[in-house]
Amino acid sequence: MNSQQVEELTRILSQHNTFFVATSDDNQPWITGLYMGFEFFPVVGESDQFGLRFYASVLSDSRKRKNLAINPKVSFYIGPDQPSECIQGMGEMYIMEQSEQEHAYQVLTSNAPAAQFFIDNLPVSPAIIKATEVKLANYYEADKNRRYFLDAETGHELLNPWTGGGVNAAEVIEAAAH
Image (cartoon, one colour):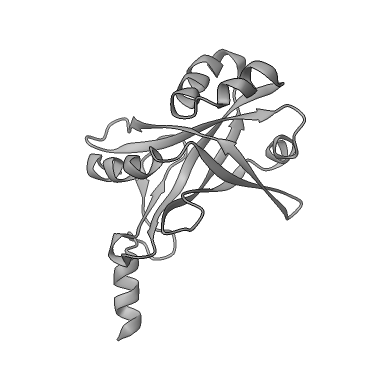
């Protein structure tokens, strides 16, 4: 993602301090709400290209933590109760090492100050989601829909695995109309 796309996503992300994350175990999905922090990071070797990471805290004995031990693939939703303009995506979620928790919790609590209560009072561990697909959905202005495919480790933007290129929902709607 380039700096203009980062600005567009940051505008929406900054309006929310929680997100819904879906995990699965043995093909049984589970969804949960979590406090959320986010950061964009520069892609090594690319000018004006950024990847995206999310941070959360996960209860030590939670179902999501058990699911993550089996399958780190997750999907997420960030947006209002009515999905007028939102961010949907997929990624890989991992429980972080204790040595990494200071940075994770700093990013998390700077976006979601209420998360500090859970960090201070419950048996939680920091978790990271390395985004692999991010979709900006605007249900009122279809020409603003965008989808980005990212390498989980490096943040490099990848081609759409289904079409070999980027996806613009307005183009899909336009093509379907003809």
